[in-house]
Length: 253
Image (cartoon, rainbow, N blue to C red):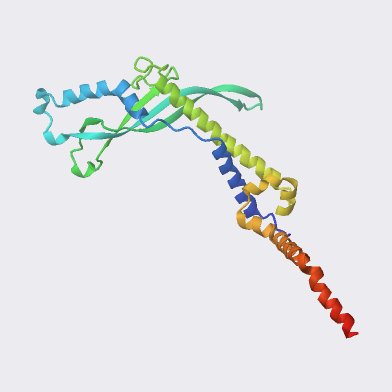
C-alpha cells in the first residue's frame, strides 16, 4: 500500500466533493417556470394595460410622437420583498440582545408571451434592449415608502408568495447545510497526516477522494493480489512440474 500525504490541496478536493455529495442528497427546489407569468397576471397586468391604453389613446397622439412608444415583450419580472427580521447583536457593553433589522430578498422570474407598451428614450442609442424588465416591490416592514405597492395592493397571504418564500427558505437551508457539512469533513480529515490513516479510520471517506489518489493508495495491494492469483494458478500444476525437477535431480546424482 502506497502512502499518500494528506496535503492541503487534497483536503480541499475532499471537502469540495463532500459538499457536492451533500447537494445531491439534499437537492434544491426549483421555482416553477410559470411563476413570473402568474404573479404578473395577478398583480401587474391590469395596471400595465391601463397604462398602455393611456399611452395609445387618441388624446395622447398629439403629445407623444409615435416613435416615443413601442410594444416590447416582457422578458422578466424582478420581485423585491422587503421585510423585518430579528438577529442577535452585542451592544457597547458586550450585552447580547435581539434587535429588529430590515432585510430584502430578490427574485428574477422569467416571463413569456406578455407584451407591454414602453416609453422610449429620445436618444435612439439608448433604446438597445429588445425586451422589458418589470419591477414589483413589496414592503411588509410596516413603515416603508408609501410609493411602493404594499399591503393595500398585495395579498401577503397569496399562495404564490408563500411558495416563493418556502422555496427560498428551503434552498437557504440546503446551502447552509452544505457549508456546515463541508466544514465538518474538513475538521475531521485535518487531524490525519496521510490519506491512508484517514481511510482506515473512516472507510466511507473514499467516496470523496479523487480516483487517482485512491488508485495510488491501493497500488501495491493490487500488485500483491495479482501475485497471489499467479501463485494459485501455479499451485494447480506445481506438484507435477516439481516432480520432473526432483526426478532429474535424483537421476543426476
